[in-house]
Every structure is written in C-alpha cells, then in structure tokens.
Image (cartoon, rainbow, N blue to C red):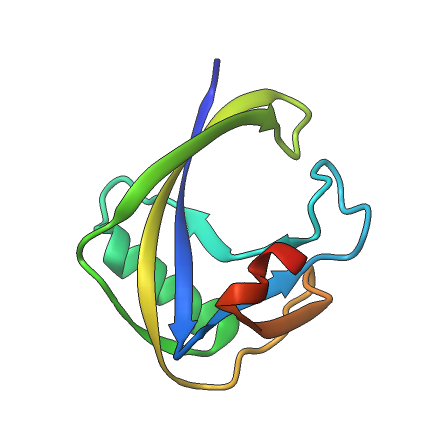
Length: 120
C-alpha cells in the first residue's frame, strides 16, 4: 500500500487553534475543517519545511516546537483515487504574526477555541 507522509501544524494563539474550511463536498474527503499541513520533503528538516509552507501559503510566522506530538495515521483514498496510508507528523506551532490569508482551495480560515474543535 502506498504511503503519504504529511507534516501537520497545530497553530496555537492563546486558547485558539487556526483551522481552515474547504468547500463542502471537496473530494475525496468527507471532512470540511482541517488543520494546515504539507508533504514532507525528504532532504529537509520538517521544521524548515513547515515554517516555509506556512509563510508562503498563509503569510504567517510561527515558532515551531522541536518536540513532535505523537504521530497519527489513517488509511483512506487520496485525491488520485488510490487508497493510501497517511502518516502525520504533528507539530505544535506558536503563532507569532501575520494575517492568515485564504488560498484557492480554502473557503474560510478561523481561529477556533480549543474547547470547540469538535464543533468544526
């Protein structure tokens, strides 16, 4: 089974987490609310990859913890229609500055209180 390795940013600003909403029915996933993340770059440290991604895609700066949160994984169909094992490296990020911008595949960006994450 093919494997896809992703770095997930848990971007914290006080008691809130930055989330993005994709348009409803965005194939192939059923979920519409996500944290931000990117694919790993084999020849680059995950911290550098994620920091560069967040700066380029969201126009924000973060301080990233060097200690990852426990990795997670799941098996699901990817955008190409192939079922894959997704392995997520979860990194805690402290928001520093910048106004999160909305990119082409994002409908909304929102700071969600941690106690309301299950609502999204």
